[in-house]
Image (tube, rainbow, N blue to C red; front, top):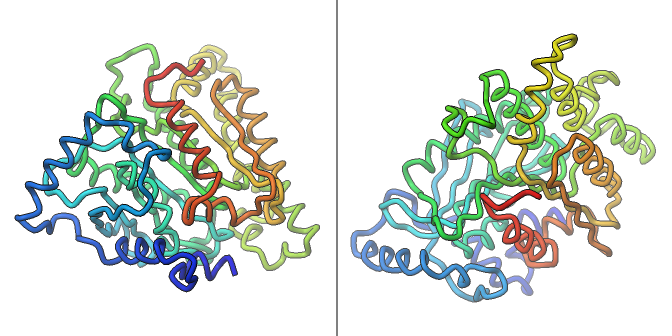
Length: 371
């Protein structure tokens, strides 16, 4: 039933509005092909948006309002699954001031899923004047290892930035920032990508004390939101074995079969290894600790208490481990009466997870103190 809701939300008569939104996201104006007569109206709308933050807060959004969204599919590799769907909250041909950007990585147990199935995730963010990317990536067995999936998501991230450079600009007065969000296995893959991104900056000599550092990138992530995520592969393999699904799940083959490979594929353990640094090089290791804390974005981990697919203890253990590394903002949000797919459905069809995440983003805007 959840898969039907995810892939074909228009089937339910109770979700007519979402069906219309799904259609508008699918068949909306292609970016770069705006009709000339639309430009003046869009420019006027955009200029008004810059000075009125409150109209984009979810508590004041008119859910029935039809927006003039635009879309673009970007291919970042030769495989048909290596693409992203990019959405803008307007179809203007000039740079658009936005409240933030969302880079969303779908789940699917590492072996299934496509961006089109999750287009409705974009809708509430577009209504609040965000630019949105729904990232596609190769699933198992097209991606034989987890590192192949992480590499795909990283290429999708880079391709999105290249497109955003030409299409959007920050609304300085109320720019929330750049958000990476993933659901289920997508939370796992996106967090691994983020940690590898941090490792690259360390290798390039990122200095958090140098404001002019070349690694102070305009598109560096400001927030990470993990939804119902898997963060310790060894523990989740044991959980799957207890359910009797470990032999049919893609987890074991894509994460390498052995306990050591499971540890290597676990985001928190990879982050801890990055924090430990180079054996016997105490001076360099002391330098990397503040760098990791500077580059790690503000983090929110969300989980349903009634999740029978990924237990909520996955989020509990991950958050505790991240905070033990001295990373200040790693918040947890637990929802009673909420299962695994319910969390992402809250974003697509409305629900408490969506509202609470937007509240958290409002409270943790880019540039605000992490203390």
